[in-house]
Length: 50
Image (cartoon, rainbow, N blue to C red):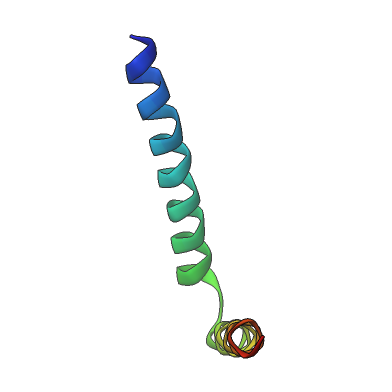
């Protein structure tokens, strides 16, 4: 039982996070989405540039 719990708790958390991100993605208007993507690209480029 404890092994199952150790497996399922992270699983459920991950699912909740994915669902939250998905809902935010669906509900957010396109301009903010584009801004988010741009910010992510900038951060990603900075990380890669180090």
